[in-house]
Amino acid sequence: QVQLVESGGGLVQPGGSLRLSCAASGGFFSINTMGWYLQAPGKQRILVASITSDGSTNYADSAKGRFTISRDNAKNTVYLQMNSLKPEDTAVYYCNAEFRMGLFASPRPYWGQGTQVTVSS
Image 1 (cartoon, rainbow, N blue to C red):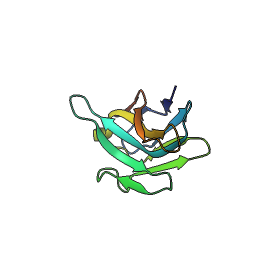
Image 2: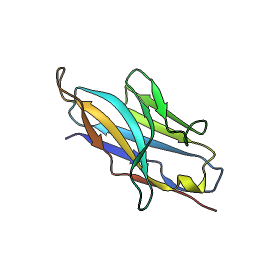
Image 3: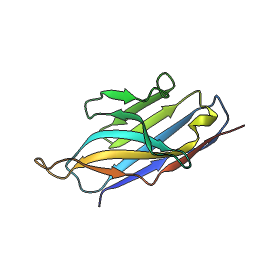
Image 4: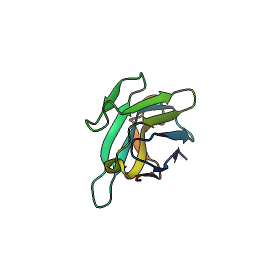
């Protein structure tokens, strides 16, 4: 059973930093793109940042210059370093990863359970 487990959320003051982690486990052949999404109350889930298996990254405009996505392929883990946090960053952050169950299998997306990030003084 493939699983994504997130950690690192919490309450932080404006201007502060948090580091989110998401570890993948279970039976799979490989992981393609991994990413972080956020969902604020009453709004759609949107991409924050993503990273391919070879390290190419993509960021939402709101994340550029403040957030850094990285991954450790040996640990099947993706990270999101968030600096200069603002109240508008408050949301539930979800990890997403595309798993391949075999060499010739198509990638399938899976989601983590989400971790709350609250930026408030």
